[in-house]
Image (cartoon, rainbow, N blue to C red):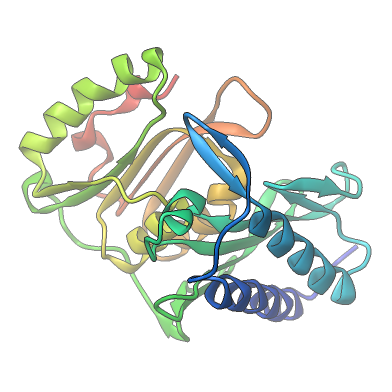
Length: 258
C-alpha cells in the first residue's frame, strides 16, 4: 500500500489545527483531571483531543491505525500507522503555561515519513515530509550553526526517579556551567521543533515516548540536524539526543543513554 504523503500531511495539519482549537478554546476553563500522580497529569481534554484527531484522520485514511498517548486503535503491525500526542506538555497546559502542542506523525514500517507539530498559542505550525525541508508556517527552517557549547542553548529533560536523577544531575551540573543556557521547558515536541528551527541547539531526554518525538525527530533531521534514539525499558520508550549536527560529541551525554 502506497499512501499519498501530501494528502497525509494535509490531513494531519487539519487534525492538528482542530485539536489546537479545542486546546485554545478551553484554555481559561476549569480542567478535569483524569490522573494526577507525582510525575504527570492526564486531563480529560487529552482524551477528547485524541478522539477528535482519530476521527479526522480516519475520515481521510480509514485503513491506517493510530498509536497515541491516550490509546491505540487498529493493527500496530500494519505497514503505515499514525503516531499521535494530542497535547504534548499537558502539565504546562494544566498549570496555565502556554507551552504545549499537538504532535502527529505518519510512519511507514516504523519510520516517520510525515510530521506535524502545532502550537495553538503562538499559532506556529511545523510540517515535514521525508525527503523535503522542515517548514514553519510554510517557510523552510534550518538548525543552528553553533559549534561551541558556550554559544549554545540546550534543553534537557528527565524523570524524578532516583536512578534518573543520579544519572542526569551530573550532566545538568556540567552543562549548566558550559552552555550559554539550559532549559527545561516541558514539551518534547516543541523542543524538537525549536532545534529544527535553530532556536535551541540541542535537546537531551533520558526517558521519552515514541509519540513525543515521532514528528519532531524527522523535523530535526530534515532541517540539517542529527537525531539519535535508543530503546529503553518499557513499551514505546526511548532515550534521545537531538542536536544541530555539530554538538553531540561536545555534549558528552552518551553515557546518559542506557
